[in-house]
Length: 212
Image (cartoon, rainbow, N blue to C red; front, top):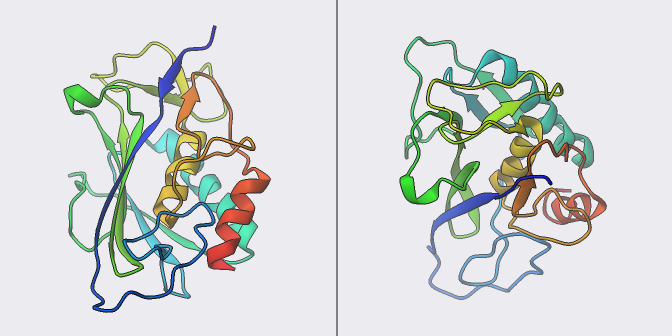
């Protein structure tokens, strides 16, 4: 029986900056602000995503493929993936930089999370987002489930598809919320050795509603 772990805690931190209530929009699977507007990136150019040097080299190709899946659906360049090569890995925080981080320490009361995306917005515009990957409690693989990537602190003996995890987190990064129907990649749970690396029709229609 596949081990099922509660998937992702999506942390949303926002601030409304308008004094008049604007017109509500259809949610289309997106998080909405207090006025019922979809939150999203408003830039027409690619969004920089810095890959911390804490992310193992074996898993970095999965990040590029996950980004390409969303881009293919939208028919344009969405992400500018920047791989950092510093000896001192950067850390997530409100630093005006979007990043993805592989963390060997995780909160003891959130050990069931494989990852977490924090999104910060003002009005209906996303201004910054960080993706945290829990490497303390989970082991990951890229395409080959026999080749698990673990850290010294990793406790899990099971493997989880890293591309599937990042595909889900990038959906949150773009503003999408959890959903459960239609085989969506935005479902809350990801089972061990589950290769959910293709966007479902509901994912494609959701993201196109806002970005295309």
